[in-house]
Image (cartoon, rainbow, N blue to C red; front, side, top):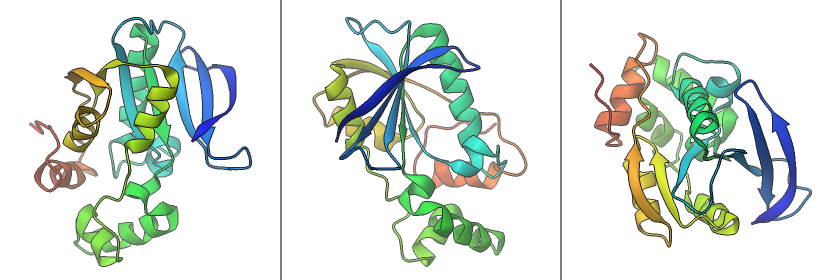
Length: 195
């Protein structure tokens, strides 16, 4: 995994530097690092590890909280400095086609974890080691991690990166995603209040 290209990227949240990471320059689905211009690499850096969710991030699906988490994280990082790592792990790493199949199973009563398992996949097949590789390349030594996911916390704690603190990133539940969020809390152990 190495840097393939980088550029300045003005966005509705502010200006960022965007860096594409892949094994080779012909990869059409590179992982991305979005770095706020306010980031001070000599201090603890705020990090959000965000797995791609085309339905939530791009089409603002109400089935999940992904798009709203992305928006909230980008606003926070622009204001305070930090890095958003956008990992190409659609549908907990089962891809968009299988994710849509999982949606149909969810409509028949399965939760998001059960649907992935029914399709022959792990409940969550994502690999956060990629994030560690990117942070090492960027020279990040110490982070504040924006997450509700204990698995991301464990990956950081088991790496060379020092975790200073976890910053919660809770989104107010809606009727369309409350069951999804309950599954995140009850099945995956996410740090969610859901009141």
